[in-house]
Length: 175
Image (cartoon, rainbow, N blue to C red):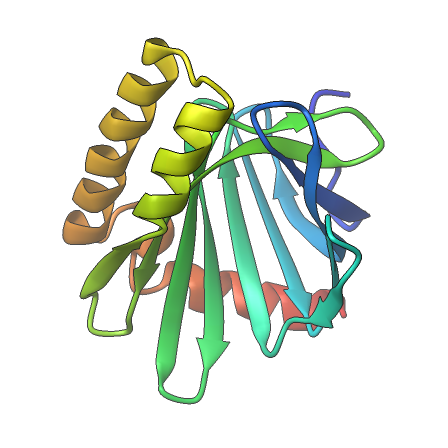
């Protein structure tokens, strides 16, 4: 199977460019899995960091992954509205162990009013030099930042005002 099936609980793993494990999110419920997109939901799940630390997420979240996009989006359901955290990284792969991607450091934090901030530019620059990111990767990440900003501006995909709400309702039904 090329994607996790609806109703299955999976783990999400992110890696760094050099192949080292970066972070693991336990127990994400698959709400929809297709050959192109995966939508999952979770709430207060345990997260394992590569340095051994663990922590729990603070609120319900809807996760969006695309097989062809170099980013993924987490919509966090909070009292003051939907907040988004977008990771720049490779398209996902699914191998029955976990949904996996390579994290390329840059993130975009989006607020309920759809204003946003690009984060971790220093980390990207540092890792780009340390891990010798190929120019092809640098160009792809730059292009994906622009595409993600366009999606935010257009309210496309997971930024559609109804996207997180509808998937969150489905998540509550499955729980």
